[in-house]
Image (cartoon, rainbow, N blue to C red):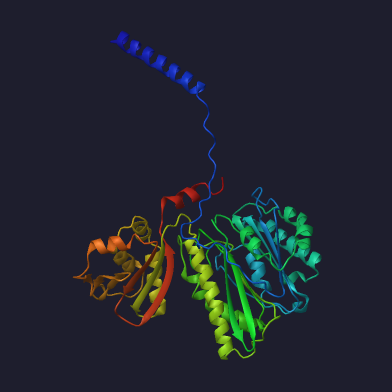
Length: 446
């Protein structure tokens, strides 16, 4: 027996040596390269042609914050008299840049001297302790000195990897070139400079008549993953030429954030760096009476731009192939409706079923039940687009599984849930969950 096993061992060793020799002689495989695939849900016409906003100039550069051969810093100079409003993440671990912006919003000192927004991608400057504050203060001081604006009117944002010190010296070294390159028509480049895992730059615009003048609104955003209410992982910058009081603008922006950016989710995760800033330069029509029809028209236009950008963030959800609107009606109140809608939108089981084009309405029932919203099983109704799936707590007699399966093949889906107990209503937007999401996030820092 011993001789038999020795002979077998000798045989396997010979095979192993032959295999090693074969591998050594084989050409080495080319290293894997990361390929950015543009989301299939991206706008077909690409980045929109946005009008110039009087009182705003943009510049971008490659500072090498993290990426090589890629623009990663954006500077916006705002004219004297510009008012700035904002909303931010409520994360308990928000970054120094977020805390700094929150402290500066609404300050009146220096308003007549203009303002600036400086944004970098690649590094979030979050969870970096005292070094994070040092970077924010250094950049605010440097921009203030270059542009001749007060430090308390310089708003900085950073997005990217958490926990690594921001090499702000590289950004400071690039400031002269940024200032020299400021231009009123550089917003498209600015949208690209703030991207991280985004597959396309995001922009939107609207115009509204105020008296005999036209008010213009433009906006850019970044966001793809770590997207959930409380602003998610996104940076959003909107610019308008209207003249409006800061408090009035802030009130408007806060309301509209709750019906746009706080109604989207990709993966239920919220970041440390979420920032939305709206700058009104005062170089266009005046909004004095906030109860006027013109003020309401302006708010609707601003809402359209914000909702457009919010939807684009979801359409660029990491690995997304489906854009999904979820509307809950018949809830006890609006808060319960939103709670229920988000439970459905954030359910991995629902999202993977959508990715697989499986009309698994049972997972929606489960998500309703766990949401914490008041619900009555026997009054529940569900629709997939035009198809009534369930009514009165039972599968609808006219529902055909083949109809549901065919509907799920669409890129854009509408799921309706009627709780049947009240008048509360809410709509949220999400996307499916595919293996591509895992691929992106498994090696985000590599």
